[in-house]
Image (tube, rainbow over all chains, first blue to last red; front, side, top):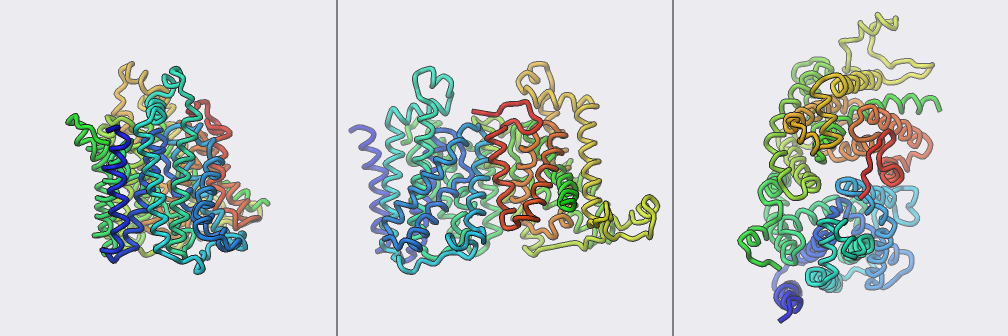
Length: 306
Length: 306
């Protein structure tokens, strides 16, 4: 059996099936939906950071842009929700196109510029001067499209798309070329890899999934403020989840979300500052002792982790 | 027009002090200290403690904060940095590590002090110097607003700007007139060659880290006066602003940071006066623009393009 099929059969399909049947056996639907969102975002970070080495500290910019793309389509054009979600994804891709020049920056400069870009988009949308279009800082309420069941289904479809992209990257020559660019862009270009084109494609793919996730998030919650959908927590959680599990793998980010987001939901709401403390210590320990993520415990022993 | 210009210069000098510690740490170690703003916040708590508990002039906090955080920085360096630099991608992982660290600081401060906003009456700053001021400028020994060119500015701004100029001067002397400073500049410009010539890079970096945190804490002493109030959570905004200032100037050049601070301060004050709803957007747009148009900063020579 080729690896691609095995990855679909044993990782992607079981996860999607479990998530699809979970709402009928478990009552906290919002929690399940958040899991879906974080699965998507962690894999989105995986696409750009795991395979190209660019750490998108302002990843939430795409998510928020997607959410507002959805909101504006629904508020001003009365678009049906699924179409508006697609437009949300398109808005994020356009934002990704605008921000493509950032890929010229290396290392920390890219991350800082990306963080600044996300904050710039937030302040643009939350600007009271644009209240006519975006409702400014007062938030949007989209009662007309409120339908959590459909939105949840949409989320699972987007997760399927995201997993498809990651499985493809993991098993294709395209993904291999990307990782070659990450390791040594100069040698990769010498071997005939088109460095710039590779990076921009991965960048747009990761923008697309975040934008779609933002759109479906807006559909699900239907009432939100700029600070909610542009909360730096989304970027940081997604990055930490992906790193905790291990990037450039299919299963790593998923494991990271299950463990860390699980812990978050167990203790995060009752005592936020103690959670913050534990969380911070966990992140520090991760970087200092396990910089390649949980999966490195297995890869170190020579096991192959998909 | 004159008022925003002068206020901008005063604020800008203060912002250079805010950014200069970050400049040192990033320039020497290629480490992104995302917890920079949290050290500012802790410095503010030192000033607050000195004012409320001991009843002294917050200016007394400057040497205390500097010494305290210099030592803390030296210790932290040895705990965190050598381990971090053994990882595969230290520049990116430092983001995550110091993000975790900033979470820990924020959580601990919240647990100890609570989340309420604190402030210190601005006339308390430099109250003890009122006599000196009267001797120099004449008039009554009070601590009222300063009059400059017929406009009046809060005394705390002038004091903060003065201390900033002194601190930047000290950094300049350290870098260009002492042996350790010369070694520091060597490590900044070519790390591997510095190692090859037998410079003890760890010692140089530890000193830079300590001084960097010390300066952040000194800047923090003035934070309650410059920003009006402070909370345990104000660290991240301060960090982003510091990055803008540092990148605007250039890395490894304290005079560049001073220039960056002034450019930032003046443009902030001008936007604030004429287009106030867009002022929040300014630091981010400025940061992205400068990174893309002149990646080496206003006074820089180094290239940072991928």
